[in-house]
Image 1 (cartoon, rainbow, N blue to C red):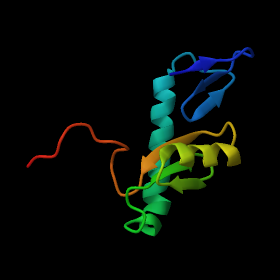
Image 2: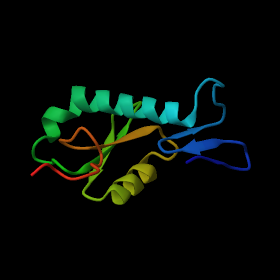
Image 3: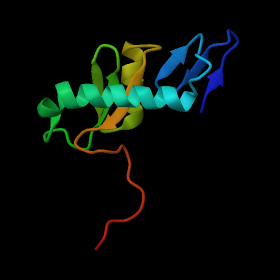
Image 4: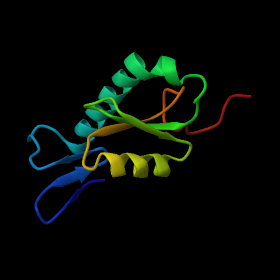
Length: 107
């Protein structure tokens, strides 16, 4: 979901911008942020955080690699946004390929 404020800025999950290239959608921007966060996680953070913190949510600043981690995604995001207002980020779950899983496990 995206919102435009009175200054014409576009805000979406993990990204605030004043001008958006015409060929990029909000979904493209989110996907790019997630890919950048995943690359930072795989290259710099994975060995440090797994398996001790498996299952926790991590918010990764896609430009600096700084991160906030918490059991609760809302708390992690609140902490991140208080430290890095307006920053681009990706949300990941430590030790998992996806943030959430839908469906049931095979028995």
